[in-house]
Length: 196
Image 1 (cartoon, one colour):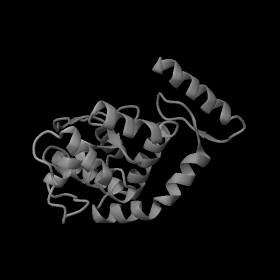
Image 2 (cartoon, rainbow, N blue to C red):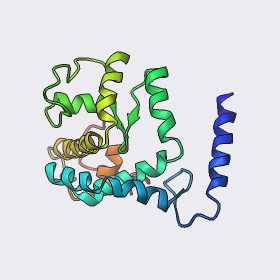
Image 3 (cartoon, rainbow, N blue to C red):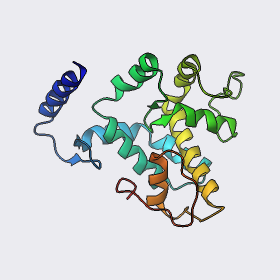
């Protein structure tokens, strides 16, 4: 059964970490060695800096969201994205910033970021089919596009909420909204524990 296989994997993963210090512990998630996160994070620093400037967002907020996503997906990152997308055909979150394929397609439709403006197939109209998801996945999984899509998503959230309240200086609210499905802007947004 797949649950017992995952349990065995996590048991072996945890055993392999003995002696590693220090650890990050995302809200309601397993601990991950800081060394793992630091190694991956350092590869993306340049893209983070560029994306934060392009979309006029706080680079530390973008970096914090990246760290949280890296810590959450660390033990499973190379297994789950392709599995969910190819086998289950779901609207999975992919890449280092865990951007959903539907969100990516919406951002392209809105003209906020297009990973390849010369690609006439982008954006896809309506709901994404499994074939469209597989096609879009090839772009969204690449860190240079994934991080820019995440930054575009944050900019879009700030712009949408500006009609009701300025959240640009409320990183805990932006982080909360980043992780959640669409919420109608309201004058009293609340941060979740993860957003905090």
